[in-house]
Length: 461
Image (tube, rainbow, N blue to C red; front, side):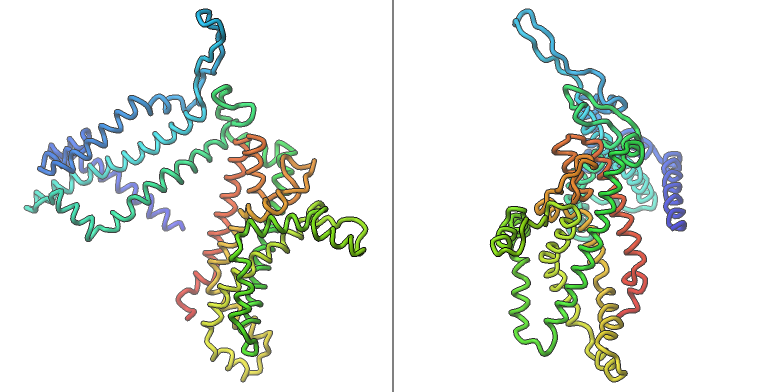
C-alpha cells in the first residue's frame, strides 16, 4: 500500500514538473496553449481539434459568467438572503420577494466545480498535446489530421469511444449526486431549514458527533440499528448460503429422481416478484392475519401470536422469511459450482475412508468458498442495504419510544428512508448514508483482499 501511494505521489510530482518544464522549453504555439486552449493545435494546422479545445474554454467561461460563478461564490455561506413577504401598496396584498435557495446553491455550485475539474483535465491534456506536437515536428514527423484521429476512435482507440458516454453519465447521475449527498451531511438541512423559505448553512461535523455521542437519542438509535443491521446481514447471508448449498447437494444426489422438477419447485419463489411475496406474507403473519385467525379457530391459541408486533419475535420472523426468498438464489449458483467439482476428489476421499461430513468440510466447502467468495461479499453488503425485505414485511415496526424515528426491525437504510421522507431531516439522513458507505466499503475491501479467492487465485484449479 505504501509503495502504491509513493508511486502515485511520484507520478503527480512528475506531472507538475513536466507542466512547468514544457512551458519554459516550449515554442510560441506551446506557450500560447497555456493561456488559450487549442493554440498548440490550430497554430499547427490542426484546425478542428484546436477549435474544439477553444470552444471548451470559451463555453466554460461563458457558463461561469452567466450562471455558475454566482452559485460558486455563495458556496461558503449557502445563501444569506432569505425569502420574505412584503406588502405591495399598488397591488393591495402581500407578495413574495425571492431570496437565495441553499439547495440550488449547493447543487449548482458542486456541479460547476466538478465541471471545472473536467475542463482543467482537458486543459492539461491541451498543454501536453501542444508539447507532443512540438516534439513531433522537431523530429521531422507529421501531425495527424482530424479525420485520421476520428478514424482511430473507431479502430485502435475504439475503447475510448465506447467508454466516453457511460463515463459522462456516471459522473452526471452518480458522482455529482454522491458528492451532493456527502456535502449535505455537513449542513443543518432539516425540517426547520427548508429553502427557499428558510436557508440552511454549514455546521461542520456536528451531525456526525451528535449521531455518535452528543445526542443520546440519536446515538442510541444509531448503535442499536447498527448492531441489528450487522446481525441481520450475518444471518440473512450465511443461513441462505449454507441452506442453499445443502439444498443443492440434496437435489444433486444420485438417488434423487426428478432433479429438474425439484429445482423448478424451488425456483418458483424467484419467478414471483419479491415485493408480492413479502406483502402477502406480511398480511398472512399480521396479528389479525390469516395464520393467527386459523390457529385461533382451531383452538390452538387463545390470543394472536406476535409474529410482527413483538420486537424480538419480529426480528426472528424477518430472518426466517428471508430464507424463503433467498435460498433459491444460492441453490442455483451452488448447483452450477457443485457440478464442476471433480468427481475424482470424492472417489479418492472414499478410498481413504472419509465420511460424508469430512467430504463436505474438506472438499465441497473449500471449493465453494473459493469460487463464491465474491458472491458472498456482494450478498452480505446487499443485505446491509436490504430495504425491500424489511420495509415490505414489517415497515420497521414494531415502533419504539426509545428510538428516534425508527422501529425495532429497522435497518440503517430503512431508518435513512424514514428520516428523509417522514422527518425531512436530510442532514442526518446523509450522515447515516456516509456511515453505511464506510461500513460497506471497509467490509468489502478487507474481506475480499483477505479471501483465498484473491490470495490463492492462481493455485486453485
